[in-house]
Length: 267
Ligand SMILES: NC(=O)c1ccc[n+]([C@@H]2O[C@H](COP(=O)([O-])OP(=O)(O)OC[C@H]3O[C@@H](n4cnc5c(N)ncnc54)[C@H](OP(=O)(O)O)[C@@H]3O)[C@@H](O)[C@H]2O)c1
Image (cartoon, rainbow, N blue to C red; front, side):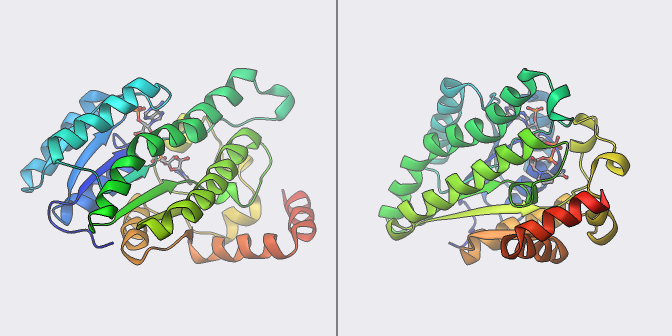
């Protein structure tokens, strides 16, 4: 579907990084954008920035783990914008560490936000997207997942699991809704320059696979935002980026044993 002036959208994780860039990219096309995250002050600043460009933004602060809060945020968006056509489920975080050293709550938090939170966002938005599609306007679901959902790597077991589950959920959803006029995309970036790495207490030099660090360039959040809007407009299912990460993902699907051996040998 085409993003047009006035297209009603909702972006989760809009207070920072990739979600913030996606909200700005949508607003640059005069879409109306509801901004969801927990940090209301950052959302208010972004809404003012968007309003200054002549576009419309709405702050709907919520924690994606709270089903009622997400439902309320979606309802407020629909009331204010008169409908909802695009939902971008992007909120997420990383928790890194060896399996035996990770506290149990890291697994629960990671799955709770990245996967269950994403499904709560999608479930709250979907009836409105289907309604818009039924009226001929079209609808689209985007999940910002990760290449980690396609290529498992050490120290990131819960994160990889949360993103693999998200990819599978969105692929299954696409089969359910595509013929009813709603597109579904999952965006799988490699490393992106956002506050994510700092919040994850991740040491990229030590904790990320050496081959990926050497061969895959770091993306900017704006590049991911542009790819997201392209995926909506071209109704692309899976987007792996940058292209070198796409090559890694493709080779792991083809020869998982060799890819994992290489990962073990190269660190
Ligand atoms: N950066 C990377 O290298 C990279 C690579 C691949 C995929 N990704 C994925 O891209 C997405 C965005 O990450 P980012 O890099 O932009 O990181 P970021 O700058 O840390 O942004 C994360 C966003 O998620 C929100 N969030 C976290 N927990 C939330 C919750 N419980 N409820 C509502 N919002 C919540 C945060 O807002 P509040 O804290 O205000 O709630 C923030 O807006 C994540 O799903 C991440 O897994 C990132």
